[in-house]
Image (cartoon, rainbow, N blue to C red):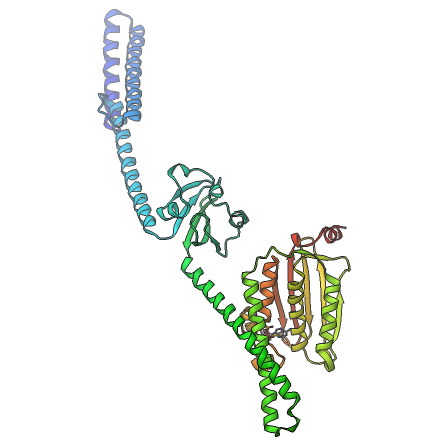
Length: 440
Ligand code: ADP
């Protein structure tokens, strides 16, 4: 029923009491003898406790040691010994796992950095050490002291990590890095840094190639277009088949010229510094000008145009780019909306956003096309697009321009009801007067 130590202890207690009783009877003082016996026994227990405590202290400081404890105290010491041995075993196993994981992550070519909930570097693998020139003493310091790129700092602070972030390396010239951040544990972060130099270089080569080809094609096409224009004007004396051929050649040259112009616009948008030429642009006159041009484009199609925009609203950006983006959306509405229907441009101010909505009540777009509309050369009806002089690059250009203005394009459409293309600009893009207006 009892453990052996307790049984021994009880046995010794009985022996003490019997001896004390016997002495008490002999001396005729039972109670004092019992009291004295209990005191001696208590002293013995206190001594054993003190020995146990001493042994525990030594074990804590120097690791496991032999002991001379007896009875229940010896058993307690053995239990402690067992627990320590088990914990050591567990610790050793855990250390082996950690070492293995570290070996594994060290073998990765991707940089891996663990950041604690105070944003300090807790651990990093060898690739990360190389990517950011980390030294051992950098462990425990703030990550953003080492990766200081403002775009990275705002990405890190934003807590929105669905999309990775691509940046040129500040530590190694010519290298491009892609950052993925994942949250784990209690506010810790895992930062994975991939070297995308090769992909970035290929992408740059692709952009350069498109830009160069477009640039080289522009001059011969201008010459061809010029001669064809002259020949069409002087085609009265030619047989009808020749005149038709010349017409077609002129149209196709025009189409190619539009394509080249759009491609050059796209490559300029991809490469040019987005900070230059930023100024407050009054939206109302800009939109009115676009609507005036759209009326000319609409011609006999008798579209009805509406504009709703407060005269004082100003947007900070590059005027030409903003004009190009809104004009693309309005001209698309003209091109893809049946005759006589309504096209409107509404500018809405919310406390956090400025939204420019280009709405038409045309035939609408099937939902399956919506996610792909801003891809280059994506057209729902190629014939229709070609007929209207479209290149399939318009919405791609709009998306790029909006990105350069920290804005976003959202497309909603209902079949047979119409489509709405809305450009959402963040608060930092309005001038003071429009912000005051929002809050007033
Ligand atoms: P495109 O030069 O062909 O107009 P865009 O990139 O501007 O190219 O547009 C892509 C496709 O999106 C168009 O071909 C057209 O099918 C569709 N689209 C764009 N705007 C509208 C609209 N307002 N209504 C219906 N379809 C549209």
